[in-house]
Amino acid sequence: MKNDKSEILLPHQIAQGQSVRLSEMSTDGRDYCSNRKQAEEEFRELRDELIEWQRRMYAEGSQKLLIVLQAMDAGGKDGTIRKVFRGVNPQGVRVTSFKAPTSVELAHDFLWRVHQVSPATGIIGVFNRSHYEDVLIVRVRQLVPESVWRPRFKRINEFEKLLHESGTAILKFYLHVSFDEQGKRLRERAKIPEKHWKYSAEDFDKRQNWDKYMTAYEEVIKRCTTEHAAWHVIPADRKWYRNLAISRAIIAKLREMNPQFPRLPEGFRLPNGF
Image 1 (cartoon, rainbow, N blue to C red):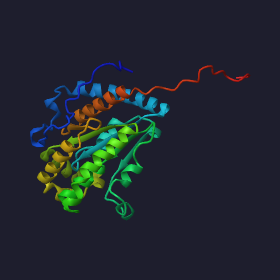
Image 2 (image 1 turned 45 degrees about the vertical axis):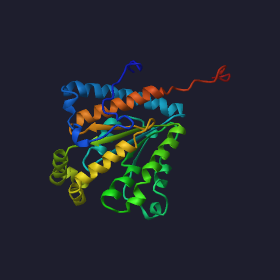
Image 3 (image 1 turned 135 degrees about the vertical axis):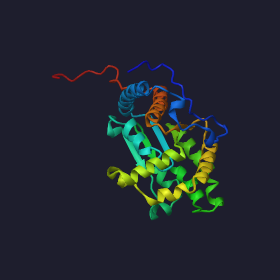
Image 4 (image 1 turned 60 degrees about the vertical axis):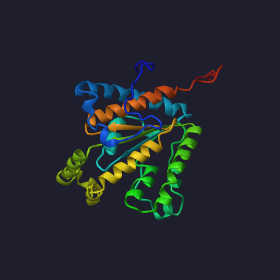
């Protein structure tokens, strides 16, 4: 493993109270890194380091890490999970994809289903979509009145504070893809047989509300960036840079957490005959 003390810069991390205008934030990773070959080499090195940190974290069994991925449709959530976490021990990583809530989930408060799948000690939990859908899609599609969804910002911040105080480190990533790049990816889903399973006519309907979603995301990122759970706005048009930027943030957090393999108790001796 590389020197754990080396500094990793995080140019996409949002500061608490920072104004967020997504239209003014680049979606193109080339604005931050012009050498793709070098970026992919660094990414592979960071992924190897992630595998090692994850082994330590699972063995140590005392810390937790929650990674939240949010994006517009075709923003790259699935690809991020597939690429960044390739090679990790599946016993220590739990991926949860949040779909439309079931009738049972709707019978409870909106955080009920989320709390149940928050990571346990030793686990890295990855949310593909999350509790933030309850202040995004419900807002844009007017599934509930504003008097219902607006107080949820406070509830989400309180929930994440509870997780933090219970020993869960939190990383939140918004995969910032451009309108044009999203259109290209959606067309590929319709044209490439291997991607037909991802196709949904509803995705094109959501595109009609792009500006409304951007407004909703801006408020989410601004209001729910806290000292213990900051958002990162990741340029996502270039998948190779997206993977690198997210890996850098994860490794920086794991170096900070610094999980270690447990040692045998002091004075331990093997029984006679072993």
